[in-house]
Amino acid sequence: MEAVRVVDLDPTAAAAVASLAAIGMQSGATVVGLSAVRRCADPALLFIASGLATGTTAELCRLASRNRALVFRLADLGVLTSRFGRRDVLVVAIRRGDLAAGMEAKLPPP
Image (tube, rainbow, N blue to C red; front, side):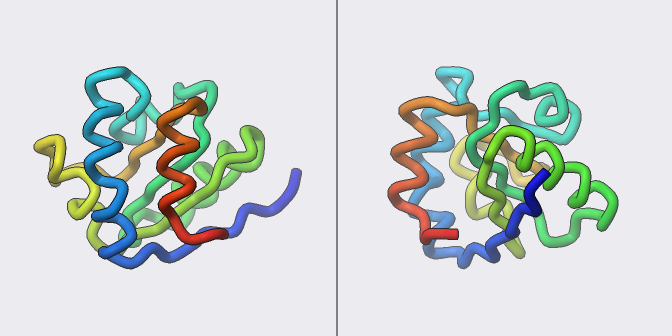
């Protein structure tokens, strides 16, 4: 299994894709919360809070590696999640598909 690089994402870049993540909430492409992300079979993008425990971060990196997903860490995940009314979230996944591809195009390369 290949090691996953965790990219620190600045708030401006996160804000650029926040509206797309909110659209994904309506379509089911955005998966919110650790338990739901653990069950997500096809993540393309993972956004994690910088305060997440080391073991949990490692677990999510293994999930990302199995699915060839990109992992982005944010100091304040609320920049991304406040657009859909959630500021208490530590993990968000975007399912593989057109929405994830569009978001990836707006994010800095890993």
